[in-house]
Length: 136
Image 1 (cartoon, rainbow, N blue to C red):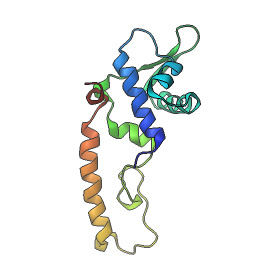
Image 2: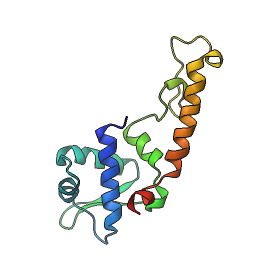
Image 3: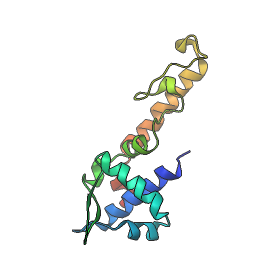
Image 4: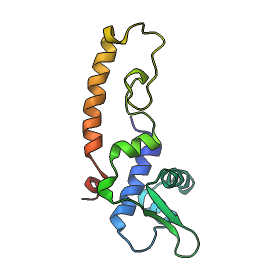
């Protein structure tokens, strides 16, 4: 299940992308429109700025704007930044792999093999869905 942080991050990115403005979008505008706590949204947008999805401008006329084109922002990349691993178990994660303490042999583990299939199919969807899909 996606956390509220990730859900709100996706909603905020979609809102900013739909604006396609010349000027940055105010946090307060996004918060009101998407019914998100402004304080919580600030921390989410800061994370998205620090990880290269958004840029920001301070002062009058300030706010947030997309650095990348919507078609270049995959759902998988946003989830990894805001949520962490996409895989349901650390032993099948491509980017956050950790061996399970209770499993002596991953190759013989029935759960491991099924979770690889789940991970691969989930990634197939998430890597092929972009912010562009959210705004169209």
